Length: 292
Ligand code: HEC
Ligand code: HEC
Image 1 (cartoon, rainbow, N blue to C red):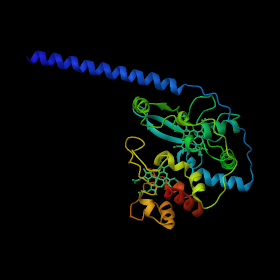
Image 2: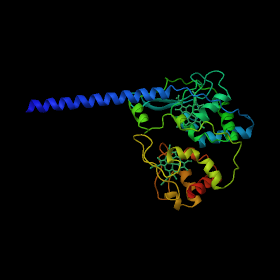
Image 3: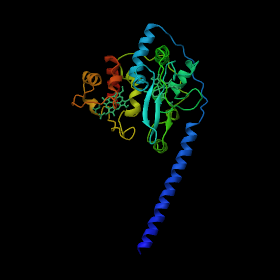
């Protein structure tokens, strides 16, 4: 009897092991194909102005849009996720011309390909770089960010190559982490010259593109973005911000503390970056959120 139970348990375990192995192999194959897919995209040409107004705007946008949050304040890059044996080892690239930085001759075409399309110079998709949030940037804002970023002092900071781990492979396969934003971008979308800057829900919609990655396109929040992160709250009219005044909304983003007294962790909710928006811009965002 006992022998029989041991035998059956053994068979079941071996079966489970085999199933897991087959599942992993299927996931691995699929993800490898997607990582190595070469996209044939010809980015739109862009005129970049290096005047003071443009560079100042670019400086502010690079903070507000989170570029400095991930690529570090000097845009010299940093290790973004250091978990090689599980999720993966990911570096937010050194965007300067220093050692370990962007390759020689990196031009406007390459910048637009990366920022708007989430694709690296060789046509393959970038990991994690949230280009789906930057895809709608106007030519003016895109140009300002490029003017600012490509004019920074060279930083020598070298890293090992980013690498997807086994857990990262499985979670990407199950669509649980946004590894390849290039896959969900409408690459044919045309760049708009400029959006009218005014305190309106329309302008707020444009500005809030960077909130959507986490709070979801309908701003109703949802599950955590990755294991170990908190769930993302509803910030539309049906969430807490729906009952706040514009002033309270602006103060929340400036201080990282909600009117209900809840402190927001800047590593989870990047309020320090969002603080680079002006009061009018934040009010426009709040108007838009309240319209949802
Ligand atoms: C959530 C973090 C995050 C944010 C926000 C972010 N990036 Fe990135 N970015 C990355 C990562 C990670 C990579 C590297 C991906 C890789 O190597 O596969 C990357 C790659 C790039 C590249 C390509 C570099 C190369 O080696 O080809 C450029 C250019 C770039 N980012 C510019 C920007 C700009 C400009 C902004 C702001 C508008 C920005 N990024 C915002 C994470 C981020
Ligand atoms: C990297 C992901 C991420 C991005 C980008 C992001 N948020 Fe959040 N946000 C969060 C998370 C997670 C929380 C909840 C934090 C917590 O529970 O401590 C949050 C909380 C908030 C809250 C407080 C809600 C409440 O119920 O108290 C507001 C308001 C908010 N976010 C607004 C914004 C706005 C506006 C933007 C865009 C400018 C934005 N967020 C971008 C992840 C993000």
